[in-house]
Length: 198
Image (cartoon, rainbow, N blue to C red; front, top):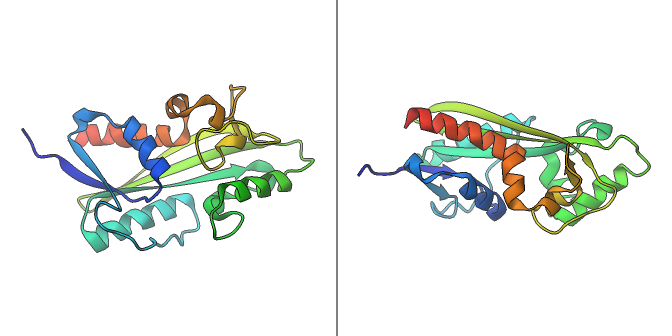
């Protein structure tokens, strides 16, 4: 039996780890470790000007400083009427305390009396494998609701209704979300790639 290849997923976000683990298949012969597993406690710099730059920066930080093959993701909610905000600032839109409820309230306030509620989520996963960098993108279109709906999920899920659905991400549940989400689409591409090189 071959030894499993270790890849670090550069996040401390338990919700993201949960989503990713639900999507990973067992036949990839991979062991996914988290930042906690390799004792990384410092904040990884995110100073990129785009979602892609931030994802690459996070993966590079772990690869260069700790020597592990690594993938990192960065996700943003881009709202048309807000000129693409919050974008790369999605996690800290309402300030550095990164409170989901405050972020949601700020978006709803900024969209008050705005008829154009179109938005999309975009995820970029950056993989550094044996010194080579690869990126995989996932995107889902939808709209921002006028008030939060649903209790599952995290982040902006209670106010994001994916196109073709009558419910928000927070209402449809994790299993359904994992079939259609931006992160699922990016991860599908990552997994297909890993399957091709295993």
